[in-house]
Length: 163
Length: 373
View (tube, rainbow over the protein chains, first blue to last red):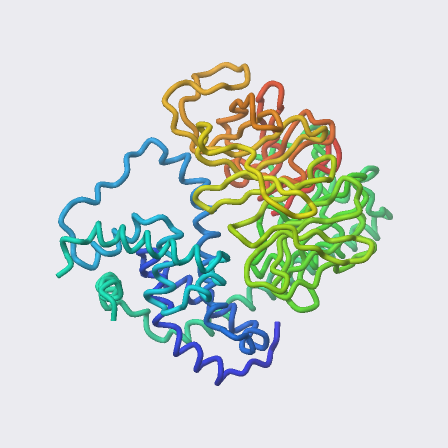
């Protein structure tokens, strides 16, 4: 692990990215503590490899990719064990009256993960389709497809709340 | 600003991360380093103690002849044995456990502390069981593939992937190692490494997730788990690259399937699959109530996916290391049961028993497992 890190450059990067990354992960996971933990771990990994990450075209892309991979890894481990436990448990009834904020996160949670990730990368983090594709490991055209379907689903779901 | 952006802002609801994020990250780094130092210290002490024991008892490391740690006279009862803190080899006949050689264990320990590897596919044994491929910390501090003799001699770093390489699997003839890496790209892909030249060739096209690899017994293709974390799909891809093929199609009544491994003769495949069917599922002949749904279960099927049946529901037989799932004689598989149990399941009868403690295991021979903790 490199002991000498360009702390000031990294700190600048951290301060620029932290809140945005946290909010993106909050939208993705719906859980503040999970979002904070994922953001901390992803940024720490960038810090540990800053000599290489800092010279990348898009250090932020590296952090987003790391955060998404961490989230997927945790999901995968959880899913393997949780599915057998909860297989017969009916899905949570999410139809009751809820706050607008929770409403949006619930609608996001109902989207397929790929659509959710594409929406958050492009709409929240402001990445282009090409860069989002690189983060997700898919073609830009696939990103656009997921965006289209995700937007349609969200609007269908939240139409009543849109002025 | 788009209305969708406004919608997402409403979803965030003004949430901000807890304060002092940068300082907390630095404290997290310090904790991580401290844990790494502690792990290294514990390992160093264990190695030192083992070395002293070997010297004073006049024994050398020889798994077959003399276990470094004397075990019980009969097969181990894992519920009565503490899980070792370092990866180890266990003889299922005697229950004797032997820590991995120091040369491998130290490199492994450093890699484990990064948390960057597939925790189930850390090792692969060559078909003659003389060599191990494993994930260690490379000279660039990233996880990389190493090979070494099972006795710890001849350690070599084989990959220099810029982002890191994991999940090794040997080809049947021992000339190649498949692994998951990034190469010069940004996404995980399957690569095949020529052991003689240390040159890697990319096999997959960067679409979707890849993991849990195994060479087909004829060496022409690779079985792997693709799809997504929530909906894994069992696929094969030619070693020379090209289109991947689904082994278990989601439309065939099994919505997801992953973590697959082919039997040594290539006739059978075992995998983890989920279904919520409400009629009894085909199972191995056994007593007990019928299996009505799997979320997921361990299955066995013909290599083309036909003739599948539930192999084991209870006790659990969850994720396995495809590169070492099947015993060399093809009669049993090893998988991870409920933590921390390592479970061996008889293919013919479905009988399962807990044989060791750890996170994952591979077969070294028909009565020996290498267990990672």
